[in-house]
Amino acid sequence: MKNKYPGYIMKYLRQREGLDENDTSMDNELNKLSPNEVFTEVCIWNGLMGNYDETIKGWIKSIYKIDLDNMEQENNDENICECSKDGKCNHFLSDSNLECFGADEEKANCMCHLELD
Ligand SMILES: [Zn+2]
Ligand SMILES: [Zn+2]
Image (cartoon, rainbow, N blue to C red):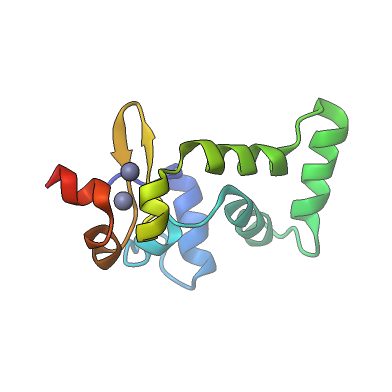
């Protein structure tokens, strides 16, 4: 399965969970983290303690005029299929492929997966 984030980010996230950097056993769960959650984990793993995740997003907003918190909100609302929200697998379409990191039980509850099978 394709991961939602590049390999080096996945390695940070795995190590934050106390896993070996190449241990894929929790990738299903890690793929469900939002960009904000991933950013927080990556900051902490790289030694930026405290609220540096929020601080850095504030700097970017001040300097580049890009509000990353708004961007996450918009991306989520636009891309995640309503039917998958009911089923809780929270998939979205990218390049007309169904990107889903849901658990098997969640997929079984979601109309989109039922229709594809
Ligand atoms: Zn769907
Ligand atoms: Zn799904």
